[in-house]
Image 1 (cartoon, rainbow, N blue to C red):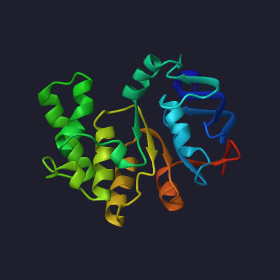
Image 2: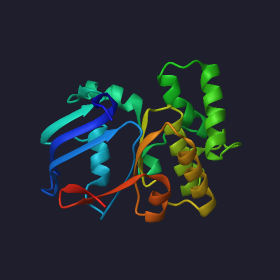
Image 3: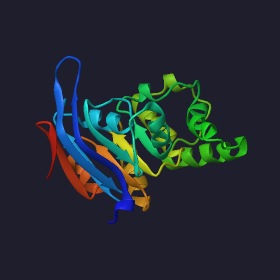
Image 4: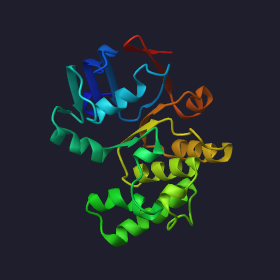
Length: 221
């Protein structure tokens, strides 16, 4: 692929937590349009940290971040990134903050300037996609863990992002719901994404290549 197809390019990224725990040491990584990457690794190896650096939620001590052909350093630099790349947090409670399911799904599109009629249509379509028709008025915090995970995914899908970063999308889901997510990913031919998961079988069915986080870097497996 040409350079204009590169969505994310990380060069020589070094990151440590304030506790002194080293996570990345000169990490290099690129992700292009059309790629579907699975990411594995031990707990604490840096998988979620990688996503948070890409989205500007964490700042590396060294290295360069280039996303959509622009260098990203400041908070304002990452606003565009967050509109064009959808991040599914590992913990659904970090993603959901509105009283009802419909309000949570509508929040992103409304902030993108969509009309109320457009947003209503987006909410209906998204609920159908994730299999939550009839959940519009349900109180979010009263949902089960699996239902919250689906609503979280719905809030990301509703933004119609150009790429997805999915952090453990099937945690807490039953087999039927997991199959629904697999179907959505496989049916979305134009979607580019990176998925973090400990479920190797899930990754083998939804991604084209696998990488493992290890010893401050990343290796293809």
